[in-house]
Length: 474
Image 1 (cartoon, helix red, strand yellow):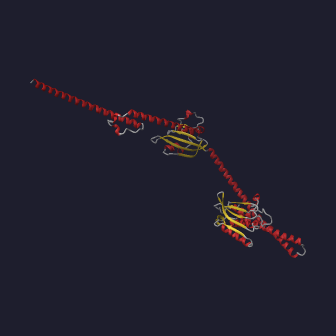
Image 2 (tube, helix red, strand yellow; image 1 turned 120 degrees about the vertical axis):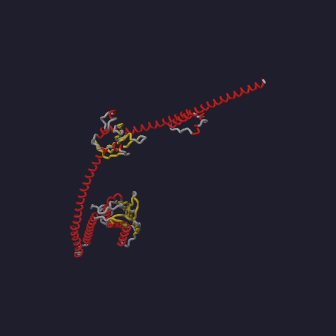
Image 3 (tube, helix red, strand yellow; image 1 turned 60 degrees about the vertical axis):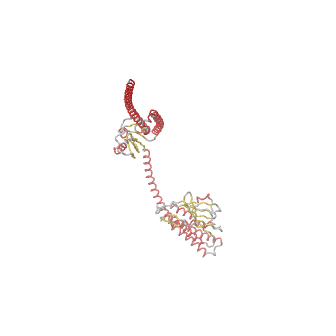
């Protein structure tokens, strides 16, 4: 009985102990739940604050898997923040170095600029200015007294209307303000203005640049005055040339009228002497008469040449497309007909086209081909070439021969009236090349020659692409 009672008593104590343990376990679970909730709250707080700091520092926030309760044990928020701060400080140091360099460059440009530069705020107060600006407007104003003053009081002085105020134009929303010929205090400026915005796009500063063009304007005025005077001189000179041309024309007609009659008398009397008094004259006398007749005829030809070159100089240009190949062939056939016994090979390039007066350029080609024909007379294998080549990037036409040539020392005489480099063995009056020069000059072109004694000559001429027709007489 006693053993049974003891067992009952032991079972009762065990049950009581179990109840106590269960109660304690429940209490521990409740306490654990409270601790877990508190830890979760603390972890959430840490996560939020860390992510806020990372966001401010420009670092990526923690990933989602880094925010659970298991990973929080290995999470080092202070280490992440430290590394972020170190990265930021390194970046700031580099940025600061770049900003300092940019600042030094800006200061140097600001100081060295030969134009006036001024920075103002939206209230028209001067914030800074460079040396040139001070020389122009603030020479007698102290640096400290300058800043904070209104630019319209220091610069404009009430002389510039509001519609010409660059600052007002910028504040009205323009990205750039520009005024040319801005006059104030006896100076003339080109004014440029540009805004400086903050991150929100608000205008915080306006940079103004004043380029003093007073001397340039003065020079332009003097140049315009000079141009007017030059035009007046040109008009006067043109009038003088016109008068000279008129006198030259009168002179040429006077030569034609006054000299032809005496020449006809000389030629006529010479013929009478030869016909009626031939028996009374010996051979020497008859030779003299023949020479008188020849010289008088030559002088008559020179008079005709003077009249011809006068007409060429005064003729109005009628411009158009000119086939120089055709003109060269016409000239070649003409000379072949005059001396069919001569064997001359002509090499004329096809497709030679220029722009000018066809009649006058025909005279040019006739004279140049005739010149080559004349000075190849002593060469049994004469060759005359007409073509085109490039000289200094321009198309130049040429007439080349393998005749007697000439000494380049005397090339300046080639185009002078009545100047000849060869003796009486070659016919001519010395007027042909002078006529060529006049015609090419009328077209505002160029003509020149190259040659060598015994090896022929080449005459080049250049014609501009645009022919100015109906030019003033020259």
